[in-house]
Image (cartoon, rainbow, N blue to C red; front, side, top):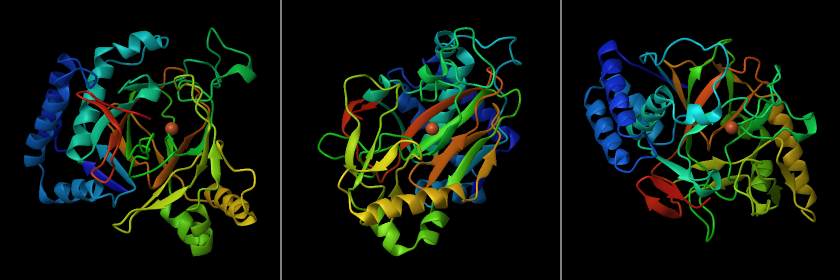
Length: 339
Ligand SMILES: [Fe+2]
């Protein structure tokens, strides 16, 4: 885990730039991509050598989790009740946070993007909008009808962010999983943590034969309920991939993956060993608020959460691709890719 802590003058500059980008429409607006990149270049000039080393470490895919601290708080105090998803999507303070996250992605040599699978939405508002949390919402559905996604309040087991078809390079039809997810909080009244599980120690403990089995395309997964309808679950994918630089990427969900029918016994055993390794792995706990963000390296860390307690806990999430990933790009400004 690495920490990037801003000095007050740097934090002020970052905030002013985020407000400027939000006024221009935020990450989804045409033209903001270029402005965010320019702001990130200017911000980079303000870094001291230690900060620059931290940023470069993340950019080169060596860092599992980057915590960004000491930013300006954004927005007023916690409201009586949670606003609707629709109003949060256009909330100016959410746009400031999202713009700040886009800028931080750029600073770390990642580019913000959206999948067509996610309705081309660059900014995801994460909260209990569809039930399943500890405290019921007014329209609480029956437990069996609660959506399994970041728009519900359910506890979510360890997972990397989908899609799970490939890492690093697009296949003929599919773009890779995100390199990074960046999270910050609009509100987190009960200081409910986000948990991050570094993958490298888990794979090291499993040993080479098991990891080798995880590189074979013997696995399948189910899709999130929140994706655009019309596609099927995925089949014949691996869990671990290597690239020519000797780097690895990991894609997995404890509640979505299984071995394909007809997969060899080694594939089943490797999956069971992986599940056990993750269950016993070290968990880093980060409590987000509007002055803090985390860049989770989605190729080297899982994340999870307990069931949401306070329904006013609202996170803002963006995805980024680093320079090692190639996607099927449908539009460059804003950057939209085929999932
Ligand atoms: Fe997630």
